[in-house]
Length: 282
Image (cartoon, rainbow, N blue to C red):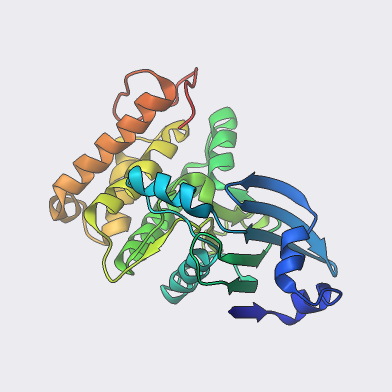
């Protein structure tokens, strides 16, 4: 068994002798409940937290994922490791208030992860929706493109791939955005599917980059915007950046277009643009 409880969370849960049981029955604003997993927001001791509790997904779910050539999410330990790796790469992410895992059987292993609630933030996806309706501040937009490019590049160079890399998983403080502080932290969240290795395989680079490119369709990106991202991602001037791994950029574009076609059920153009009538869920 592994267990970490920060002082404030330990005090908030002091009425329970078993933090795993407390995590299992914790009340709050429920965001997800599926496959033996609960995600919720709760308040305790005057603070706000996010909790992810895993009761074990069972052998049936594990086998189903493996047959679909997907790596199952066994518990909170994967996200805990990913948070540590992202922080070691010098990037902003969630702050852990509590973590626990017990059991040996991967199908029934129990675990939980509690992180501080990133209050007062807005996701870049929601910001894109705002810009779609009201227009974007060009200076802020360019600065954020470069910030995201540098973050994703640093993440990949550190051997981390997200596996769910969309604009909705980048959060920024609303106050910092309002005053145009582009040096404020840009938090990378939802790391429960992330993988950490010495080097990210090409297929997962493509998945991350393609998913991210798809998610910017509603932000009316231009070719210049895409080139700005590529330069920030690689840390190279444009000509060198495009020549660095041209097959990677082409594969990421095709991946984004595949997702776009599946979601909007229309043929994409280039650069990807917002479509009026979304189709099936991804």
